[in-house]
Image 1 (cartoon, rainbow, N blue to C red):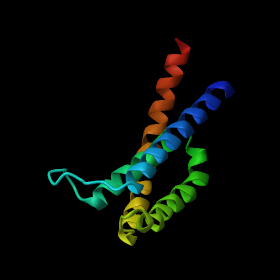
Image 2: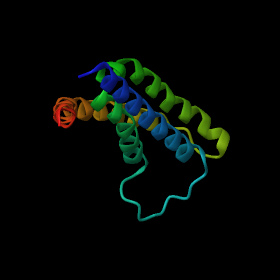
Image 3: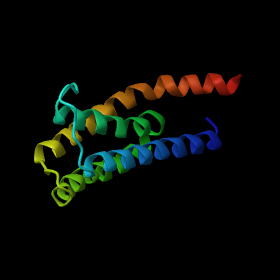
Image 4: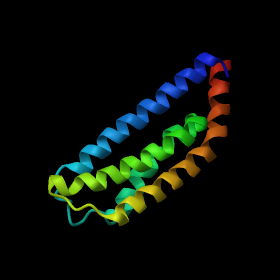
Length: 126
């Protein structure tokens, strides 16, 4: 893989992670009325959201993941610390669900990395 392609993948992975982090920050720090018929519960939502947050970097640039994971975990904790200031409840269980989501998203992304890398190499080869 060329250094230009690797640089582009890093940019895409970090951009997706940043955009997802901004969306998660907004959704977790504004008062929301969750519809009663929404599937899952709060912990499931945290797990899925933080799995999605780790996935792009794990799948596209796994080397960056190990430096990024502690920051993403701290981000989840920070959200829980800030929630009482915006009329929501901070919850240690949510932070734990965030961490589990990061782990699951990382594992899934790492499993996707090689097939994605092969596909991208085939596309680049034409």
